[in-house]
Image (cartoon, rainbow, N blue to C red; front, side, top):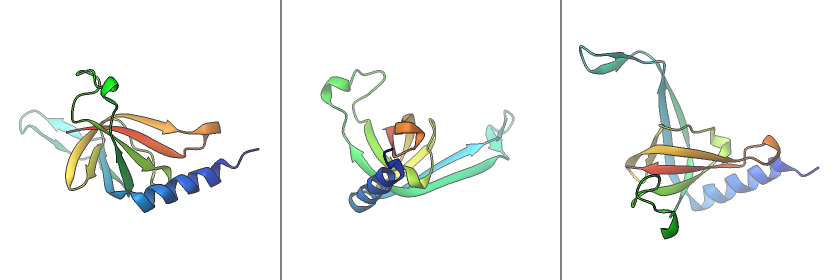
Length: 118
């Protein structure tokens, strides 16, 4: 049987070596108050690690699902699992996670490919 845990460690080591600081946050369970226009309560989940920015190929930019300016961010699985709509802080800018794909052979997450948009 192949050692996928070893593959995850290698992917994380490469992302940590070549990546930049990345913070991913999500708020869950908050309640929207229409009178104030704000959310209250809920809990915040924070993932910190390194991310490597990758471009979409020109053929992938369709103007709807993938827009010009969007990018892919490879994020190490050891930091935790990001989700769609999470806030991604990368290179001092905030982005929205539009889509998250896990590379997970045999159910072991190796890394996450996050489609990011401003």
